[in-house]
Length: 295
Image 1 (cartoon, rainbow, N blue to C red):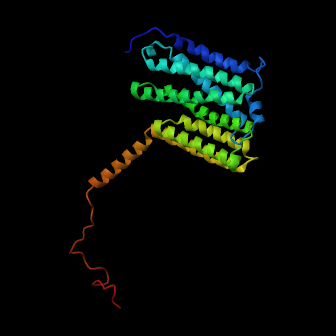
Image 2: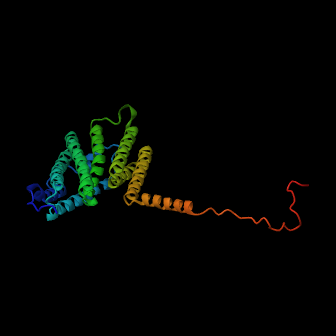
Image 3: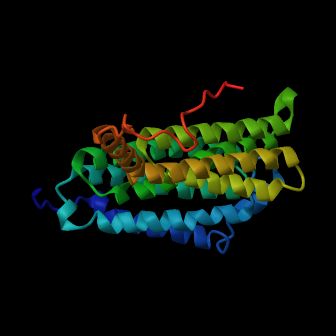
């Protein structure tokens, strides 16, 4: 059993930081901090923009962050330095999230991109650290859930934020136009999600990307059928990927293979049952057997 150590200030502060970030998002409009994220996004509309309901996933992400911030305070986890590293990165992630909201609400799109880029890097670092800790320290699989949810969404949000910046400067896909650019971003999101799903056997990242892709379909199914079709394909592919990883984690593929091998082994062990013919069998009815080629 790991030794019981005193909690570090970072781990004690983490729940308060998460709650403070949630409260800041809730009261930003009341304190007159610029315009809402949706209003600013609409002003610089682009084809990678998801429907507004997609942003409700932040509620799930913050709930997962808060759950982690409480669990990491338990005495049984005090001797594990992995929680120390994750908590430090998560505090910085919440501080950057509040800074991004402030910058985006006041219309500083370029500053918001400068903030979300290190947020994405932190998302990758937390995701890799949590998965490594689960594999090497025998921690619960659920330790990866908050960071998988966050990485899945922040990867899509980063692409959307860059698209907003380009739209704010009048760049809409360059010589190829906005539609191929949006389709390319969707393809990139799918490739990233599938790579993380296969590399880490993680189903939440592709599930979140599927959620975001379907929201892009909802937003643009009337204005851009091509983007909507690409978003539908992206949503289906990532949803299928998530389901396959779930089956993989449940070892159902291995069980099917085991059952197949057992069936083959039983077949090989069974003696061959060749039909036996008695040489003294009476001739067929009607006398001696006839030659089938006889006239």
